[in-house]
Length: 218
Length: 197
Image 1 (cartoon, rainbow over the protein chains, first blue to last red):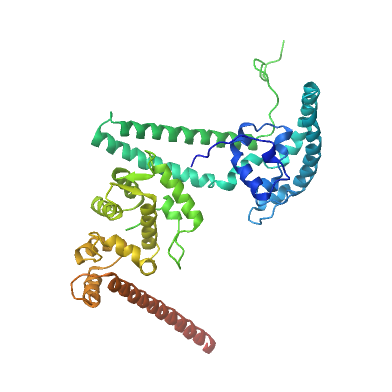
Image 2: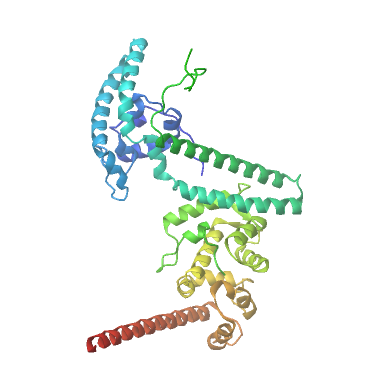
């Protein structure tokens, strides 16, 4: 169930590699895509078709079952053209990186600001790369809930049968706690996401600033 | 024997021709098995197995213990994924009324499971213990040993068992054909009545 992490290499993300090598390397780099997943240019360089089978090179949906992809089709095309431009510019920047890091940082900042708009429309590569190999989240939730119920009952039997201090009982107890933590983290993320997607963009607020009040200011 | 509604197994299904799970279903089952594999040994011990089966079915403790003994064919006190998969297929076949097809398609596997002693014979006592898994009535079991014990040793070898599965599925197909013909006759009668009116 756990995937072994592997090192990221720029060569592995090279689009001139073979399809199979690319797919294998992308799968092996999924964890690193998540750990280094910031809104920077390098994460946009991976073509969507390399990551997701249901998308062609231009980011258009191939599969009809995933209908809601079509909604972002136009924006995906625009985004992909922009990402190609960014790719070209980034390759030049990488070659000059050793000579002038400060100018590169400035260039990255300006491009990342413009890429914010693009990223809103392009599906997150790391997310879709993971989703290709994983079971649907509702199914995982169902399985985990059921497993928790079964294992909680099993823990009672362990305690009655072999005692609380037996290493198997402790192992099961720790496992159940780990499972509960994982489930609560996921629920927290889901709640956070649903609240975030439902609300309009919140106004910027700084710590310590007074909220709106009904009393007239003095 | 019924599966608990809303459990994971309740959402799985067998392919009706081959009576096996699809790759997608197996993938889900593997994940589920690993979730239950608390001690990281790729196995379920008797306690975990009991609570799993108790949770997802309405089997009694005695029946669950019998099933565990049947599946623990290496007598190590643990069930691996292979045995788990066979069990799930049996449960789903029972749930979806595919027992005849399952026994026909996987007669060798079922025979090996019921051959508890390993002497390539199934006695009436063993078959009686496990008939609840395959929805075989008491009288049907008696008829089975009367009609198919060709060698006369009051036990079934594999050929006799295979013959039984073939005859059983033939009977099922004839029953299904009869019900379809009856349904068609009723439809044609209704349509004639409508035309006369």
